[in-house]
Figure 1 (cartoon, helix red, strand yellow):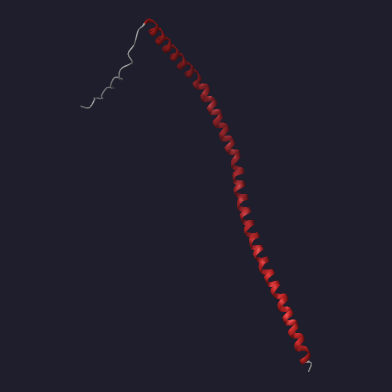
Figure 2 (cartoon, one colour; figure 1 turned 30 degrees about the vertical axis):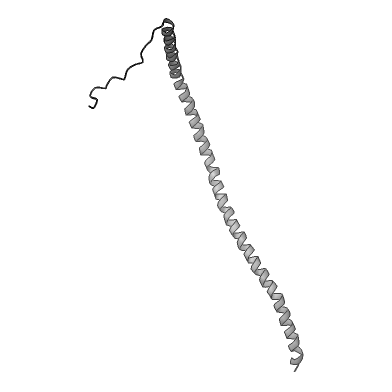
Length: 124
């Protein structure tokens, strides 16, 4: 009976409802996209944190290893120092002999080829 009056009201409400629903659907779609982007960023950050934690836990052992290497190098330097000093002494003596020979006009020929080891024969 009041259908002729309610029909235009329903049409207006339906039209208004569609105009309100479309922007809400667009907003919902955009919000879901933003939520998915935040989820991906969170997962990426978690992976980066895991890598950083791994690096942080490896710094201690690496530092200890470098310290041991430094100690070993110090020991080697202490061990090799007398040998280096003896080598310098030999070089000084050789240099002194060369200077003396030069002063007196004596000339030495450089050492010939090293002698063959037993059992080695030159190829013909």
